[in-house]
Length: 161
Image (cartoon, rainbow, N blue to C red; front, top):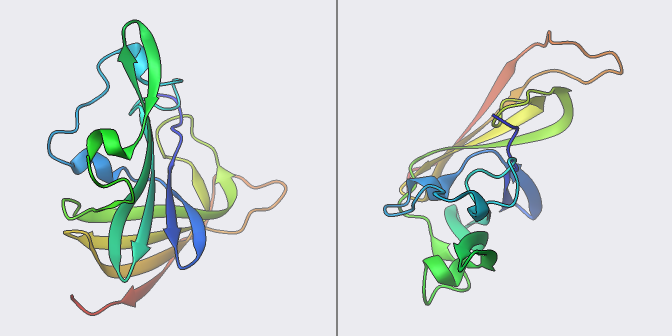
């Protein structure tokens, strides 16, 4: 599988790369069924979501998506999937962990989201509400960085909402 184009997450005033697909957990979302539903092999899911965490809640704010209509690939937006929610929708359906890699690339893997970066920010979410954050430091990039790296973990606890 080709390395995939990540989602986007706006968090604490910063735009992060999001290597998790919360929309895949939404009931009724269909997997891509036609090769023209995605613009390249680096986007098998057929869309790019822009997410935001606001007041410890996860929202889908924008959606860039393609679908096959009358023999052509056409772009559609969040309104197509969530009519009446053009400004965003609370992601109450998502329970899991968001992964946001940060820093320099340490090891490239040509598949999914398997590449390793200097650190990963993991944000635990339960029914759309942030419950915990932790940072995993994978190492420091050097000009001759190899596969070996040290992992340290920092956990930041949050109160339940």
